[in-house]
Image (cartoon, rainbow, N blue to C red):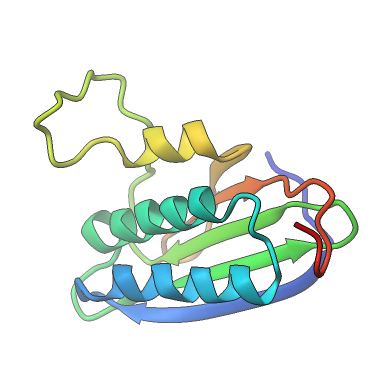
Length: 144
């Protein structure tokens, strides 16, 4: 299980079950990353936000509901944590199957696993929390 992180800053946004929610989640993440001056891993973080939001939209959000995206910056040398909370059941896991080049899905959690320093699934009633963390070494406000 993951350890709790001491938060320095937290931001969140709620999105309805709509296709436009994924680009909105990416834009929210880009804005927060810029506000926190975390350029080092910005592309990796935004890609993982996109994948987790897409998974929530396609697999975790029942009709008429939505999901919440949380970004938390740990104190001192703590990580940047991305969480997507949804009310759907089931537990996401990395597929063991080989995904063909032409496939349009099946790579999301593989990308999260490859890019993030840690990831997992936590409990939420109803639903689940899918999270990932990024070490942002030497970061601080204004540091590259």
